[in-house]
Image 1: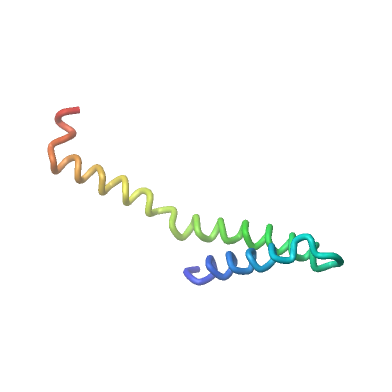
Image 2 (image 1 turned 135 degrees about the vertical axis):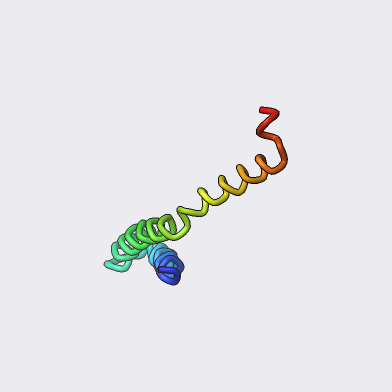
Length: 72
């Protein structure tokens, strides 16, 4: 999963380069951009979603250790 996020993002960027082209390249470009972009968003969310929780725990630990919570 660590490599699929950047690969899907790259494929979405490559597909978006063909948007507006004549013929079937434009249609496939739109489809590749939308589908790969959406999949990359899902993969990156699953991969990095837990990091927000860790940041909140770190901030809470810093507040508790500094005594700032007692002042609130």
